[in-house]
Length: 311
Image (cartoon, rainbow, N blue to C red; front, side):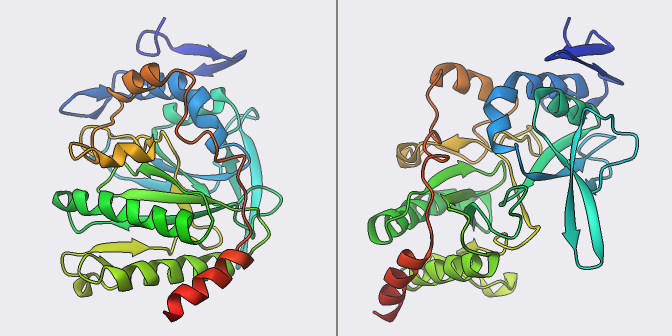
């Protein structure tokens, strides 16, 4: 039986009670809460490697995406014991946050109207030391996505060709792209953010009419914004394969770099309804297969970057 038809599903031996599965969460096309639960159950094997060992922030929409958003960090007291928790320190105390380490948890969160899932760039046990760096290439509107594609390819050349790093790219489910770099976890967030900002400054200096690092929106004009502010303690990034709470239910989707050469690529190509076909076509292939195998410290790339910045 599908989540739409059943009140209880069993996932890896764990029973999850479902509720209000017929409630419409998205329109045009119509997507129900049961559809959301089914999607996350189907995609769990692909998604869990990007969720495990990372504190998670839930973006919940109990009345669908046009209703109130609950951006929730702390685990509610009623969550069952099968949901793993971890303590995250903050300035005035600590939080207890979800760690999504099994498919049953993913299904349970979907049933709690968690449409979007955002995770730390660091792992449990080393939360102050990121194991990923992320560049958020954010255009002023969807019409500038072609610029985002071209700038992401230039960013890759800078990171890989000139700095000796390996980069991975995904759609955000919004207007832009995220470029990720795997790290060894030796550097702290201040070091990582400083490095990301300097990389962005170098690329913006090369493409001043197309890219900006200006945080104030009114100062950007129609240029793409290179946002590096997610590279900070307890900041989060949308996880691969997360649905986004936007019309059409777009999905943040890992890409192969050559896919950015396609002028027909749009930020909304991959959705809850269509990403399954992509995964079926890819089979065991994974554009991000090398992410876990490549880990970099920033000391040597930072020295190379200093020379580039001085040119």
